[in-house]
Image (cartoon, rainbow, N blue to C red):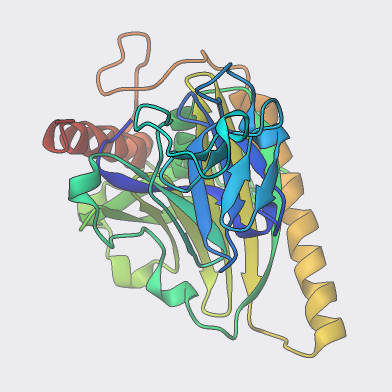
Length: 327
């Protein structure tokens, strides 16, 4: 994992009012809930008393109550009340669990994975999707594979005519020119130029002009992605690490072509269903790969020029891991 960064981990709608939610992320068992103000709280899902799951309890005002013996926890993970000792009895400081910094923004819950004294506001959500004219529908899918594999699938331009031969990869465009890959401020932008094989050799990135290329995608470190279909239509993805072997993917179809309610719903539903088909095609292949985190220079892989977005992703990920060292 890359330390000291914000990770998107949940769809906002999953955390409801007056109902705690269990979520496993980063191999941690977490409980999330909304306080009286609607703000998100997040602590370890294990009571410090006898180890019961707090997510099986209930929300009371700003706090969460353990279902076993009624211990009452605040958002900092501190026990404020032990009913057996009397509600007005002061609780010793060692009755607590770990708390986490979370934030709700752009329809997602974001988790600060890092040192609490280094929190920043650098949430990896694209500026061009903040337009409130966009509407969207979301797919949630569980993949039994490391999150780096899920990310690299969305950076893979070589697989299109094979995995998606009857959908977005139609046309048998197997020759991969480039791709051109740019990276700035922890954002990757890569241009796709796949063409028919007419006996020609592929073009290198230096032989291409990006202004001539109309298809491009983004990856925002550490775990979000955007397919820029055109100005009024996009697909945005989140790859939330559950543990070293599992990932939750959230894929959103965004559009601002139509805003008439019934037509908007129909367009969004069609976009969602088509995105689900694409995602299933990807999943059927990615699940056959070794279930381990990827890294630069993996000896069992022989990468090619068309894999440049994956190569750049791995290199920059390692740079960020070295730069953002845990205290």
